[in-house]
Amino acid sequence: SQELEQSPQSLIVQEGKNLTINCTSSKTLYGLYWYKQKYGEGLIFLMMLQKGGEEKSHEKITAKLDEKKQQSSLHITASQPSHAGTYLCGADSTSGTYKYIFGTGTRLKVLA
Amino acid sequence: DAMVIQNPRYQVTQFGKPVTLSCSQTLNHNVMYWYQQKSSQAPKLLFHYYDKDFNNEADTPDNFQSRRPNTSFCFLDIRSPGLGDAAMYLCATSGTGNPPYNEQFFGPGTRLTVL
Image (cartoon, rainbow over all chains, first blue to last red; front, top):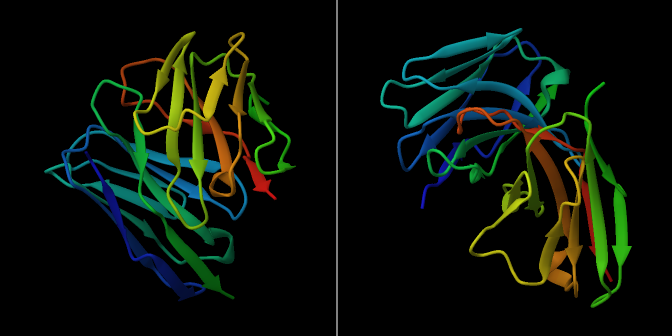
């Protein structure tokens, strides 16, 4: 079965610093999603990547899917306290179904 | 605003006492999901509905059941909660296009405590 591994598990950065979170899949990804979760709340959709080499940006967050479609990275530029939370990558475990799996998340803390 | 609503936000039950969690959506999405998320773990898919078609994950315990009486509502029934069922339960919806390219919309979750 497919697994998503995220690194690092947790991250503490000073406000204004850049950071990168990685998501590695044990199998080819057919669609990769990034979500953000604040403690005790549901997941908020950030971005979806489909094609190898694809890159998307929203405000100060950029996500990329590598050419082989087995790894994705999420990059935050000039981090702010509002970026704090847990970032999770997700994917359909089997192409063509609705059986989604998620990584264990990366907990981000931004120090003001 | 279109959204996914979960009630209650916090639920306390006793060991073995049946409990029902509810989810409603105003997005008119065909697919609804229930996830279990334990502390510091990834959300784990329990089952999903594609319209009225129920799809159970192979490792979802029989203790967990679900009902979807109409497009808008979906319920999670835990027949005999054990201490290990204490978790956050997340409901999500998605439209039907060509999976897996479907963004999911999540509710705020229900945190279940089992005493």
